[in-house]
Image 1 (cartoon, one colour):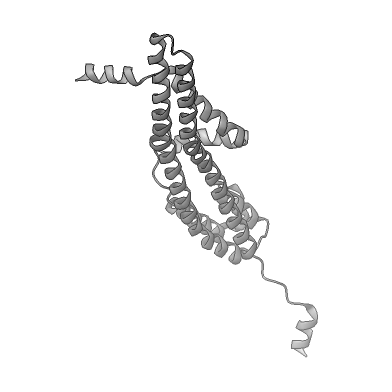
Image 2 (cartoon, helix red, strand yellow; image 1 turned 180 degrees about the horizontal axis):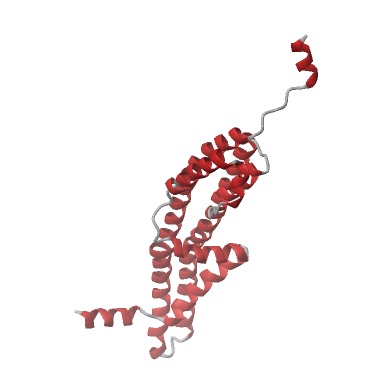
Length: 227
């Protein structure tokens, strides 16, 4: 059984057709995408095996930071070890005296920017899923052209026909079994993380509003009340 499977795989493997489809897909995606986003798209493959983002550890850390601020003052938060970049930026702004509305705008902006980066990476893989079948058709046309050019040599017709047929197969497989599933997984993870990160906004805003110094009462108002 394994011998027959290996023989089938060997029959369906054509380096020329694979080079046309893979090389053409990579080139087309690279030409339409910035270099930085291409690097992030490749790096995003490491996240596919991870579980979905959960905000509970971040909420627990915010609760701990809130207790520290109550006991030792807001300046003590500046010495806390915070690994999440959104919370770290928000706490730094709170220490500098930012109020609740400013913290809400800051955290929401960072969350939306993160979503845009994730969706841009997913769009690159979506583009690969769109391009791969077209590159398969290009390989088919190249194989047919080669076959018609070598009609006088029967031994060359088989190789040209293999390129023509297998290029279409490779394009369909790359699009539907590799690029499209990666796209869907990245988009699902991005939506889940955006929803979870929205949960950290309210406690950070509450912390900021509690730590904002109370406005001093104007002297004229104080004198008027005494009079």
